[in-house]
Image (cartoon, rainbow, N blue to C red; front, side):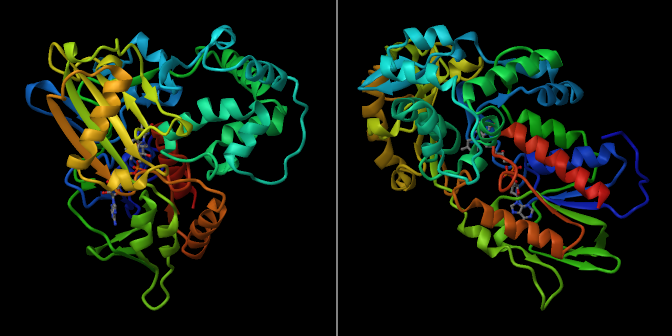
Length: 460
Ligand SMILES: Cc1cc2nc3c(=O)[nH]c(=O)nc-3n(C[C@H](O)[C@H](O)[C@H](O)COP(=O)(O)OP(=O)(O)OC[C@H]3O[C@@H](n4cnc5c(N)ncnc54)[C@H](O)[C@@H]3O)c2cc1C
């Protein structure tokens, strides 16, 4: 989107939500020469991105812990002047451990490592090789992600690769998620190539042609945590653009622009809603007496997750912690979804001589455990960590964050939610809705959603 390509004398655009999606939309609109006002009830921008420095030097990430540095993210980091603050993940982060039969085994990251790996049987290895020759067949209907993946790679890869991966990203269950919505790149890869392995090879070739580095994008954070990104985005907006501690409940379109209940004297050209589904569901939209309701979005499944940030003396853990972390497949029946090795991933997360872990609990698998108190959860977690990582003493620092509705699950009914959103936009011209409810849940997807929303608001 070009800079200053639109006149600035038009009414400003209202953006609800100062999370990463709303801030990204705001940045793109400002660069196109538009005025914006971003509303958020929270006292700080960033939404679920929360990095807090605690006593003695612990750096707690309560929400997301890391960011995939796609080319678009790299460009943004550089434009915002965050280059000197950027932290690449440690080389050891390429190791990811998977729990199998009580042991932590490395997830193979190359074809040669896959063939050598003790994580999968010879039968599964042969099955995966065979997938390369899978013919292209048109698939007309969506299906559960688990069925889609099993069809390609068999039950063992589903149980010990996809299932823990889905837990790590969605805190979800592949049997419930829609293949088409939850992993659109796999879906499209199959449509185009038949085989997911051939699709991966084609993508690697396309990257080479685009001049992008091979392999997955680097994983990054910042010296004071991920919150540096929304803070820098917010600081890049003209002063007065951000209205924090402000609750908006009703939005009414009129002949002279949109009116928000909390700012009745102001008018807005258009409105962008960069909100999670439960917040969208509570909004009053449209003229009084003819409100458009997004209430059904409240039914979109968002399982609860508890993130336990635990600090240990280094000498109190036997495991080398030489990795990104560990994931627990559901067949292993562990009380944990997974554990991130924060202080291995990025420096500056723990005081000298100490290490930091984040344990994820709950998700679709064990929602009740996520809802329990710290007193209930901690002994369960300590027992599991003693077995998995050889912890010898209790943690010296504990910080608990409970997300009652953590991550939207793109299940088989997801089309019905997308239809509700599209119908509201159609009925109320000048209204644009996006973010994880519609555009993907990872931070790069949210940044791209902000750009999409800004583009839609500019052409509408
Ligand atoms: C526990 C957890 C771990 C995660 N880990 C990762 C990870 O490691 N890597 C990754 O890429 N992604 C991760 N994600 C996903 C990613 O962090 C989110 O999808 C993304 O941050 C969502 O940004 P957003 O701006 O769309 O929404 P949010 O961050 O939810 O922001 C929405 C904002 O809207 C505000 N709001 C609510 N109601 C109103 C209203 N009526 N008017 C105005 N404003 C309102 C809220 O206060 C909030 O600030 C994680 C998510 C969670 C919950």
